[in-house]
Image (cartoon, rainbow over all chains, first blue to last red):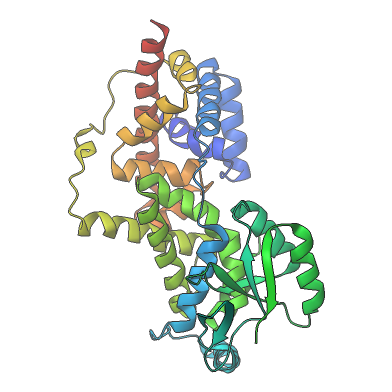
Length: 185
Length: 183
């Protein structure tokens, strides 16, 4: 392997994305050249040092996505014929679920208005609940945020098929991450 | 190796929102890191991140399986990042950084400089767009040069060259900061 080619593949070697033959050649070249070995050490340190700590949108980004997907009317890309049956099934499911949720406040009571609600539970997360903790909770219970936050900070959650709403409510309450849980009407 | 995300994307193409959630959870963090590495504004990055998943929702049916799902998704993000810069008519002063590096970096000084996150961030910021995008995908998203070539729609040799120059520029920049720090 030429020197320039080794240099070109060094980053990919550190990233572990080379095929086995390329990797073996790189390992042989690095073992024979202390300068390359030092470069590898530097690149590994660089990789570790720049591990991004930026907080991704997480479950709140997912909630936003689900809300916009519900209301999205853009034409969907054509699908191969073999997947048309899935589209038909998907449209049927979407038609069943595509219902607007409008959260309003009446007197001291929070009520859900609108014709139907595409969710099972309405929750308010505790102010100190972190996104990571909320994510872990939702993933462990198979819950999905399908709408929210409302003006009142409420989220609508959807249960997995066949899940017991009471058990899910108990799990949410026991987590200490929610301030309130109610069944969606 | 089977693409673990392909069944999810196939279900998304059929309008399955739970599959979209699964795909989101699998890819949202690396995708956000990639976008955030190029956009300094976290709100702008979050908006673009959202746009990528909306496009996945709308265009899942157009995925032809010629690449992995991850590559396809990062290709969408890559184009959106490029478009954002073009639409914003931003002047990228980093284009003035030369492609060819004459003086060899000092690896010891570069290694010392990696201990300071600020040095690393500064040197990454110094790279011109095409270098930074390539090295970010290669280094922090663990994508191979073949996948990056598909994402950026350039030949594999171009990707290798960009990543090579990015590496040299990064090491040279870090060398300078490592030497400065030692003085």
